[in-house]
Image (cartoon, rainbow, N blue to C red; front, top):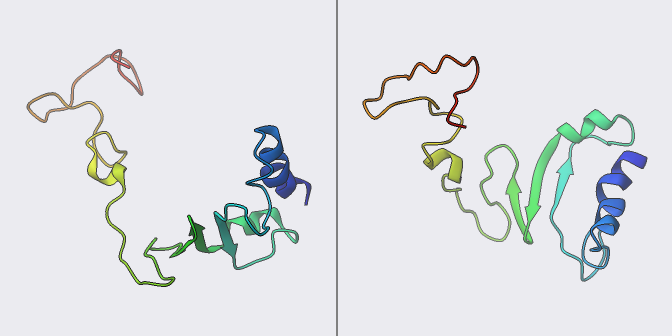
Length: 110
């Protein structure tokens, strides 16, 4: 319970937003996740997200398709469209060939 309070109530209080965030109450912003298992039994149960509510809209957590009042397939996330996303090689030159940087794990450009 203390971990959940730190992430919600205490976090909202720390940033001075406890009037708008941190708990489920009328008039507060309602971005939350719905879990399959009780996190009070095991904190790892926070990994069993079934639904996500963001800006009052309900989404299936596996696909992130909206399933609430209207059904909408999601568009691409920004990282799925960007050439800097994790699914794209980081060290490509203008010819699409990997550059040799001499630095393991990263390059001197970052």
